[in-house]
Length: 361
Image 1 (tube, rainbow, N blue to C red):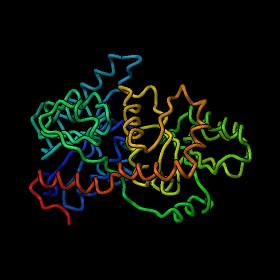
Image 2 (cartoon, helix red, strand yellow):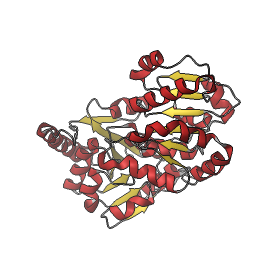
Image 3 (cartoon, one colour):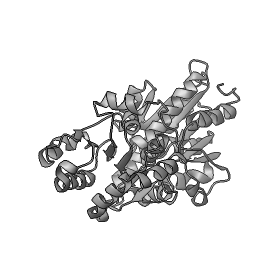
């Protein structure tokens, strides 16, 4: 029970926006049902900034960073200190439930919950389960997978599938393009390498822009804040090639007809919510190559194409193929089948049922 007298749910997450955003979406829904939430993640991590922007209470603990290419024992020591700090927090706050949303920064609070036998749920968003899920699934009361492909890989006595929770604020195509200052007519391609951008996508798209010149498709190219000036200096000056460091993804996907992206599950889910088919370029360094597994699941349903980073020389060919109306229409219809519409409300409903509260109408 929280200090307000409402039930308290701890949301353990961090590392990337793809892990944090579903926790924040859930916190918003639970708040409407008089359930208090506390997000626990890495001190100084992206989750601290995002929770402040969403007005969700945050508690930071040491978390360490897992680098599989260059393991550093000091990071494991930091994670252990985080588990001890999270254990003190949970013993003091006594939450009714702890929910882990993945990322190494979620390990301290989820491991502490398992240690103290506080009811623990895990949300596995990727087709290939992450390290925290693999470590703790057997100790969790429930594991909620975002995609069916993950279920055979999760060792849990209670696994269910609910789509990835997204912010379901809706914009019409016209509204979105007006907000972005883009032409209301014509097919629009969104290039989005994640919140920090992707240098490989930026370079490949710039090469296509040089090759096609004035025949380049109408494109909103989101470079990532740190890459904007470098891309601007390298790209041709084309009126139909709009460069931005960062945009609101909800608006950008609502404006787009197709997109060229990485393959984090948050990106794929937002595309599905807006019926946008994709050319997916999985991040090669992603843990357990989970982005490739995500992309392959999406592509098998006909909702897009997978191009590995080593295959980016074929980007122009695949891009023009997807913009063909005969390819685009069925791909857009297939993307909608992955739509997570209503997922946050369903997730919140499951939590409220576990707490013995009535679901929101």
